[in-house]
Length: 162
Image 1: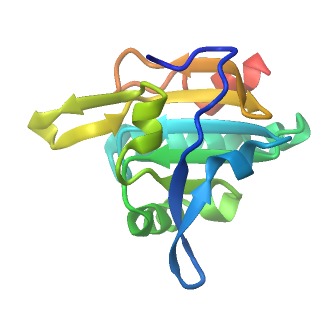
Image 2: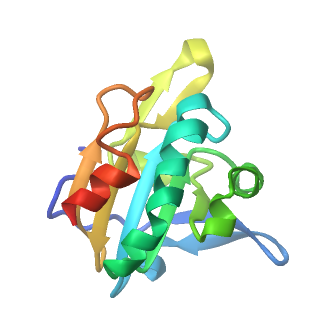
């Protein structure tokens, strides 16, 4: 079942690189009592993700802050090492975005946002989406029909909804 507006996000842990290496990041801890934007995308270093999706949230970060958003989290079915390097390469980390790896696609699958595209090596990858979440409950959800397009799921489109 695909997550919908009004649903509570499932408990899941994602990964990031901490001071001592890979560490678990329980989503429940990131969401409790907070206003959070979560955007998911097919893969780090891929074209639309790197050239359009991440930059849209870098451009709008200050505007989200002004609206009281506590954190912007990018989720991709990649390992935490790749997510850390990609965050540094794109300027997302310096801009204050949090990039988390969903290496086994557990969170992505639990919210019904997984898809496969074997010809390009994508297995259990994330569809392109963005959601606004308050205290773990989805308030706004924008999912793209085509993973190669970043329109409804971009920072500007999400900003206009909250």
